[in-house]
Length: 77
Image 1: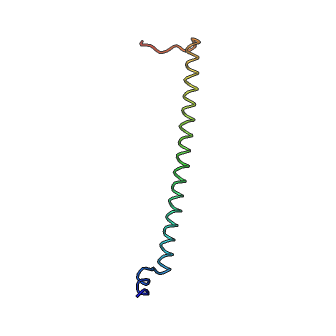
Image 2: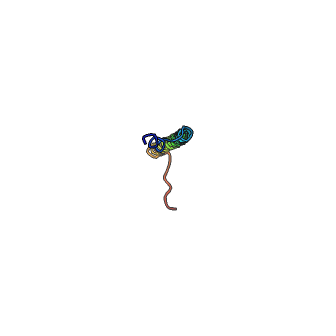
Image 3: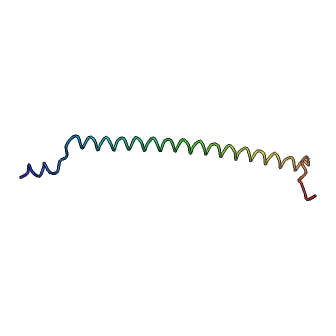
């Protein structure tokens, strides 16, 4: 009777290997996707910070020119 119980609860080695292979492949695919997304996010973040730094420099330059009287703000005509 114990043999019947064991036969009903075990799976074939092929089915187990296929399931393990599928899980492993899914894990690899997900890891690749997460790495790709992480790299893209890092690239976009770098671009945003670079643009913010450039805007800050331009604003500082504009502010210093206004303070020096070199640039006159446009007013109503």
